[in-house]
Image (cartoon, rainbow, N blue to C red; front, side, top):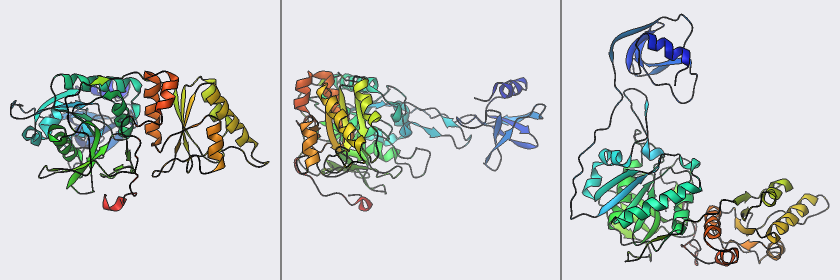
Length: 445
């Protein structure tokens, strides 16, 4: 919002956003104030299409002119039910895929619901009967455990009402956290649950939003698959999307359209954009007449600690002081962290003793690796064996964020001893038996 003094001045002239005005000799349409920037700066769009900001000063000449431009509204298309097509529920949670910019005004249009997305992407009506629902509107970095519970409950409700598949629209930054958490929470899934988003918003010519949505809905509607997956661009171009396991996927680039990659395994499937063909790459769980249950207990006092040279004791001691019940360590190499050293590394000794004390206090401490590919093996070197003797549990090559969500879920649904035993058990495909060669990122493999 504009500052109080600017708002009052504009109000005095009867000026609202969209009105054509003249300020300090410049003419154009009054724009909404961006979320960032000086609230005393009046933003107008000039006739040449550029926006300019004019800092407001007391007594500045402002004049309302004839004409105005309205914020663009997305026309809603009538959606007709076709009993020959399956039903796909689209649940919108926010993120880039649910935001757009009105180029005529330069203003950001508030996040719109899944029903709006159906209107924006009419191809969806040829694939399935679409049910759209906005369940929340948050950037993915703001998601907390209660949001996971809400999403799991919403998915279960749609499946109970007969959806052949569910699509969740989600911000990309923490999508892999959500896909792994829902993989644990949604037990005995009978249909696909597809999580997807967009690296680039729908107002941009290079947007991946529509293609990801079309491929994801196609997979949810027609694929003979059950489980939680991520659907995103397979390459930089618009040829196909990859379907990734919800517990073996990671965002590997900040902005590329093919940022998401399956880790230590091949993608589950490929969905062609134009023809819609679905090709499975390996064995996969099929749709079935299973009775879905939601194991929604989550333990919030679980931490994720990144190991690095020079880390301090107080960073580790915090978890015992605050009574944490679980800690995932993102260690180095095969699963190591600072511990016993020479006379100059007394701090490392204290860190090791603190980790041992944390495990002895009843906290489940799980070791993972900072390396993207490969397995944790704490039996190769002495430090790894010492850490195991101190009570640290091997993360079995799980990605750190997957081990984190799994530990939250285990401690929220099982007694501690049972949860400890299940850390090394494959619950939702998070532990792969045979590891594939690392992909060639540039080729989009």
